[in-house]
Length: 72
Length: 159
Image 1 (cartoon, rainbow over the protein chains, first blue to last red):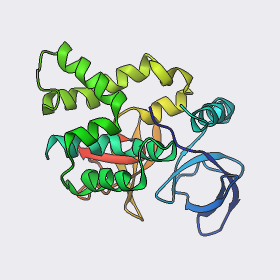
Image 2 (cartoon, rainbow over the protein chains, first blue to last red):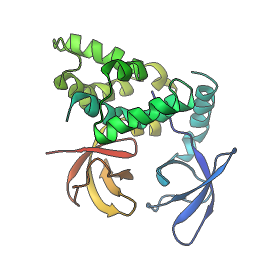
Image 3 (spheres, helix red, strand yellow):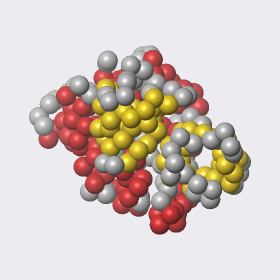
Image 4 (cartoon, one colour):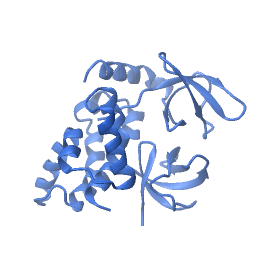
């Protein structure tokens, strides 16, 4: 199985780009869908926000990612 | 398209985690990416070593459907079009720890192109969900076309 590291949106700019916080670093990405808002956890690919982590699954997902990154 | 390229188009979106967890190094990651994107030659041995879980299942599948050569396109298509989704739905292995939204992201879906986006992306729709996916593998896709998607990529056109 594979997983993608989620980041939290800490800023949305007027031009449709946003700043995604990954704890260790911050990266810029573009938003194309209208379901994404400030504070959402998202998955980014090629500098595009491609998926929002639903609020009720954030905890489970972060747990899974943390467990995985500490060794499968 | 040769079987190596076909397999890697679907599998490559998962390769970054192999890199992040140290299963493969930077050089191998680039080789896998080149093979997925340009069809550059990469040996089957290297591909199988990089995706051991997938090939364990592909070998089981080829046995089940009675095709001896597990690199046969018939086996690989059946794997990515059906078998892989069934494994995820059954929540086998690590999929048992994965929340529902992410299992859906890992599955292969047939989606309809709704919009051509900037940055070589498409907005596609399936099951009333809209997602942006990269169009690098399907530059010919137009609004209304159907494509198979996996993670953040449109992988191939659907006839």
